[in-house]
Length: 112
Image: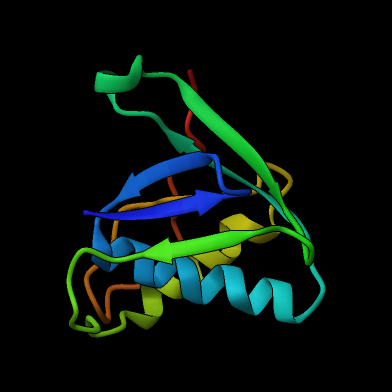
């Protein structure tokens, strides 16, 4: 289980494979100078709920992985995540689609 650390204090535990895909989308958006919101559901062990942060070029982000291997990249997942990042609701983790099964369907953003 990896971690995304925002501004040194806000942390989200995210499985390494998902974190890799999020990192690719986040860094691509920032490279293009496109700020966005990022929302995730909190684990029940920390009270549940959800957290949203504003990600911009000046944000301090750390992607910390528990494993040392780089997972294979699913292009359809990258596209689905990038789609949410460009929507008014901002980036949120969507389930990984099967490779080659791009349906264009994206689940609704996380809610409380």
